[in-house]
Image (cartoon, rainbow, N blue to C red; front, side, top):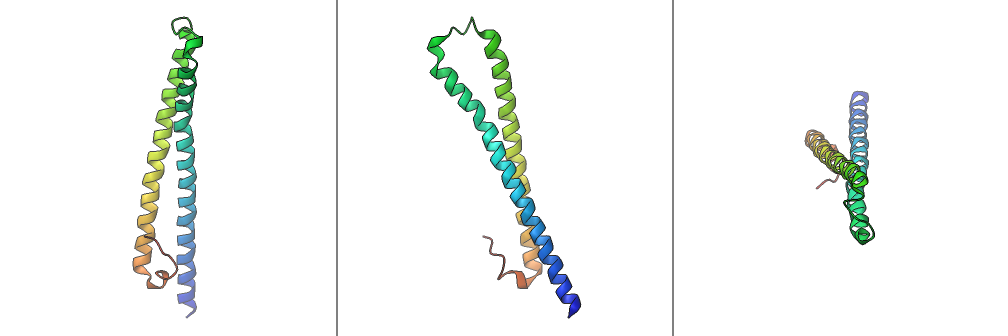
Length: 111
């Protein structure tokens, strides 16, 4: 009986660790979305104020800004992609644990 309780507590700890990793991946996803939307905001401001400047005169400012925006878009897409892959992997591991342990079906309700 003691062994069974120990096994159940280890399983709960493993599931708890997986859920903590999932929360971390969701935070990375949120950060990736924020990084991805930052260049869109910059482009919106540039377009809205385009009548106040001449593009040919301020090319030395716009080119580095566009390079930074492209890098931020790629970084945001990378974070979003990586977090989606990790979340799917974690969900798969939790489903495997749930299939092995019938006692977890009542506690863990994942669709």
